[in-house]
Amino acid sequence: MKAEIICIGTELIIGHTVNTNATYISEKLGELGISVLYHSTIGDNPERIQECFKLASNRVDLVITTGGLGPTDDDITHDMLAEFTKLRLEENKEETKILEDKYSTYGGKGQMPQINYRQARVIETASVVPNPIGTALGMLFEHKKTLFLSFPGVPCEMEAMLDLISPKLTEHLRTRGETGVIASKKLRLTNITESRMAQTITDHFAKLKKTNPFFDSNPSLAPYATLGECYLRITAKAGTGEEAYKLIQDFDSELHTIFPEHIYGYDDDSLHGVLASKLKDQKLSISFAESCTGGLASKLLTDLPGSSEYIKLNLVTYANESKIAMLGVKASTLELHGAVSAETAEEMVEGLAKISNSDINVSITGVAGPGGASNEKPIGTVYVGIHYKGKTQVSKLDWMARMLNREQVRELACKKIFWKLIKLLH
Image (tube, rainbow, N blue to C red; front, top):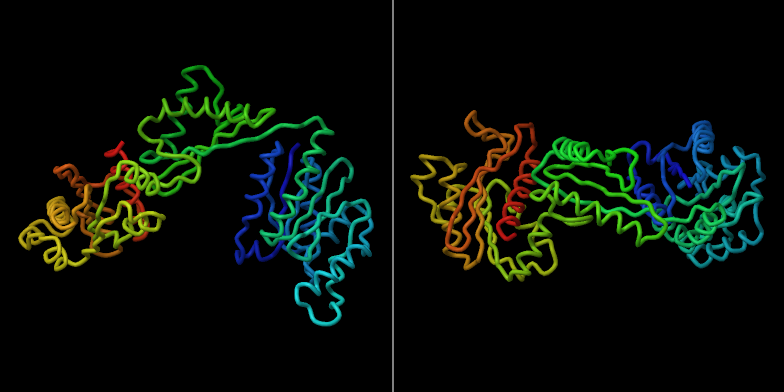
């Protein structure tokens, strides 16, 4: 079964509300074996909503709407569905009673306003999707071989209603002989660009004369990129969840042979989360002396529950005076080489090691911008010192020359440092 999700609401179009519903519904439909092919977002405009319904019904089997089910005049989703299908939309006595009871239960005073009765209207052939949280009911009905399903736009209401209606969707799939599962898993990579990642995969499968997994294959791959990281989503279709996950696991193993130095985790993993797990597993402590990152590395690690198990001392030695007073950096080093230098990073981390009593000590100094840069030390120049097992190593972080703002420099520096530490603890 192929589906399209139509999210209705002017607040989505103008950017006042972030559309999380489409993501949630897509994931849940995938678990049922339903392929979502399109996401559409439309304002509260009758003509454009009708256009969306017409387009969707001609290209998919299941049209799901969210939004536009409230009591006000701009909540027109059910009106538009009735107009599009030419089916009657009438007030349902049973739903009216339910609505009145909810109004009273939710603290409404006196007679329920007349405008609220709009929410008790039901299309003549539809099954009602009850709303256990709010007042806006949903509907499920079939028209000319297209299945229509409506939900309110409030995420918590939509999620609860989708859980209630999922068994009916599964039964509908059985009648069509389309039972199955769509499963996915996200691999997280770092220290590689999206283009290099994609090219490496394409070359690998071409060499083996296999189908390019970025196109029509099962499992299939979808690449994503964010600052300092890339993702690969593996998606598999099979008759059962066990069969789908077996396909994913085999594909995952092959990708590990292609990227042995870049895959660091799965799904919701983060670089700082993986580092924290290694520190706890190996019963190691860590301390930071940060300059340009302003405490971001420390914050990311201490944001995680249980960070007291591995964090010993975090310092933000931003000014030269604090580097001298707290870490013992020589004034002559700062004068000769500058605060952003390998020499200063080395003295920072060695000074930290003397006072922290940590297994691992890290220093960070650099130019985050927008000021303070020079031809020799442009924005993004960052040095990191790591003291571990009695040895100090200092390196300049390496990234492709590009324009980064202050927060991006800090974030990327932290990610690259966390990756260095993960590899150090392998």
